[in-house]
Image (cartoon, rainbow, N blue to C red; front, top):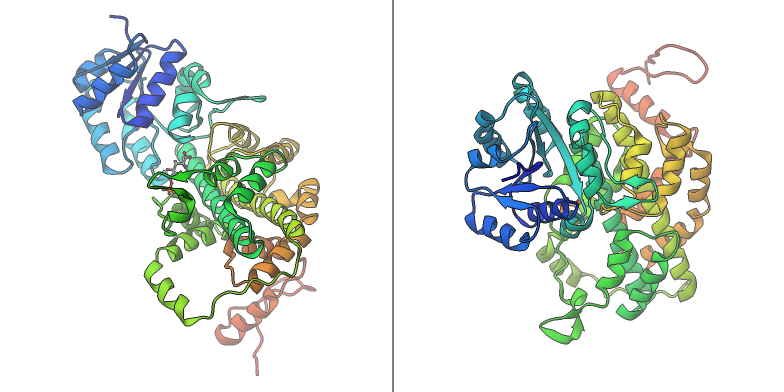
Length: 468
Ligand code: 6PG
């Protein structure tokens, strides 16, 4: 039997789909899963393709050409460590072990360190695009080290989503850079999803749009400056009938309680630790948390009189404002996420090429959008750009949409519609555009009660005053 060029551990839908994607590109792959049914399923779906399944871990490792290229697609956490412990005795220096799950970057750091002395390369790789992405072309964010990536490049480039600027994969950076980048991707994903739901609330409750209109609006938006995967699927969601009652739309019977697996929270925690303001992401996580208090919300809802729609703006105008507000909010979500990534790259010595990250997000992943073309231009012009607002052209794109956002916020407030990410996006933009802020007062207070000292605008040094 021909030795396989790639091995996959974990044959759930994501793992199986990646194997089939590789096989479609003429890559011989061997899969392994403890669950025999999953092995059988792979062989069934992969019949007539260069796909094998191994019955044991040892047989799996022996089926692979060296250096071995192995990806684990198993649930993040302890299982990853258990698989590493199980496979380690069969591997040799030069082999490459990829963790393709959503692992926390600090776990990835620990695993890189743990395998350091063995010569086995550990590559933490973010994979985005869900099940369809895995089957047809995901966006992949591998970290680790450049030598290991050189061994993976050919295969990963073949199976990645393809764009006008090449395959959606690149060596993202050292150590845990790949998983960190995927974490930030997910933080941005949370913010954009929350923004879309806020705009949905405005269009539905203030503009009075029904599901057919919403479908049309999001479809139109997806043909313009808001073109993106999340806007595209949102348009489709509004048309989906309810299987249990065909007279209803599914979206209207889904419980309004948003779940989460934690990557948005991880992004916020890291942003707070690195002192990078990323309130759009924080607010998106908080909004999911708040949605979880369904019972309490229902009780409090009965305390207040029913919300009245105030038609201060005409419908067509409001839809246009909502478009621009969503554009503004999406831009701020990218700005904050990329600022964080740039800061993390400096702090953790990832050496991330920001323009390359933006390029590989242009296809295959959940946050792909046409806006990333403009964002990429800014990083191509200045690879060390700390914050996209410092790029005058990009800043101007947002400035033009500020009034529209303000109008949407006013309408939302009149209608008692909570818009945490839209409003925090405006606050962020306005505060970053303010040369002289009100933080002088905070410094005065700190010095007043704690003698923490302050700096002056007209003299160097640190000062303390005996306040009366
Ligand atoms: C992707 C997604 C994916 C993530 C889901 C669910 O890029 O394909 O980010 O990795 O797991 O979106 O995330 P939550 O359950 O936290 O919403």
